[in-house]
Image (cartoon, rainbow, N blue to C red; front, side, top):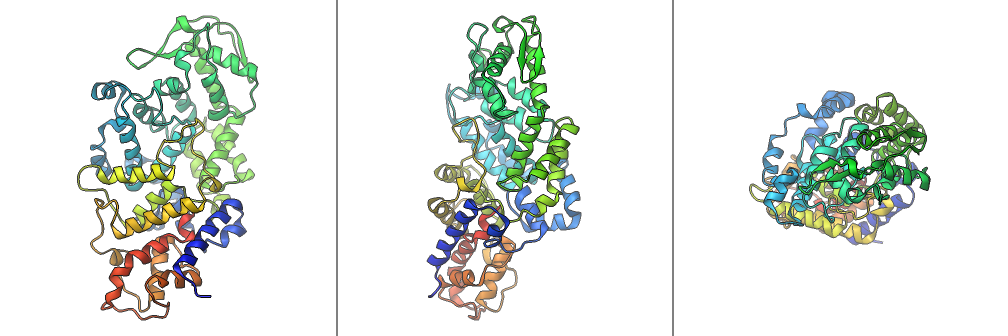
Length: 499
């Protein structure tokens, strides 16, 4: 039976869903040709490979490159910084947002979301951005969501991004004293006479130890967290008169909590205790493995990362370095599926597309595409953050959205404002091969890291009415018109869908 473009798209969808259903190495190998470790590292530790990035890793070695990325202050990012000046509210403090916008405006949310897309696509500090996104998802506050119109950008800047490579204990305490979290999970309305249990419950269940707590633990934690609230100006404050005193016991933590004046210190002591709890270490290690290694976290690596986390006082950078240099990570090729957000940003990076020269029209379009795909940055309504397993993102309809994005971006149709290479084909394949089959092979190696299966190559070429053996010359008038379709179909392949 003749292999066609429709067939390769159907096969790609089936393969992506197969990986979602069974993420074992054998299943992944069926759709992911062998790629080298450099490709594997960059696909996981960044939002997508570029030739310059691959060359840098090969020059420095994996450990040298990780050390460089773990020191983001040493990496120049002037072009991105200039782009972000077009989105001034994305990192604005509460007072600035309040001064610039009417109450409950969504404009700051929108700028923050667009800035997140820009950072993922074009920052030189790729490992920082990937890890910052992990923490934003772990200590999640939906944007947009009620009440945090003025504080959500500052939360991103002063909590998750500030502590991305720092200590989780510090990040957790910063989160607990930020107006956005206190508003989102209702602690700002919690008082000694009417304690609100929402933040106390999610603090344990989602942010730290997981579901090992009792209802008595929730009630005691809610009591201890009273007084952490928000002023009428939208800033954090501790109000002693709202704090419930009296001894508490929470998951082995004990505190006399004798005075209202000492209530804030007592609450911070609980947060330090939770951050260093063995169950928290295991939970964070597991989530890092799910993000960077496999949907089923390897037990051996989880145990080692939890040990490193506790041995380093909840510092994150040592944990990440051990993870990426571990044998479990090296063996995990093909075991993660890109989310729609990652597929879009990886496509931008693979094709060498840049931001528009002025304005934000292209960023608006990219962000709105992700809204349609259900994966726009921070737009997950529940407090548990976006799912990070293949089954959540592998479906025929989701795959169709990816295919449409690939073709729109390859052809320059939408968003048309993005800057592009002068000649897309030459930028991807500088030396024109002798046959169409060799051309698809070269595109696949450049865009996915490996050649496509033979049947897929033939199917890709069906869009141009060519065979793999068809000769190719620079005078071939049919080539230019078919390039966007050939590129898009290569991007549609299962090997590009995998993280």
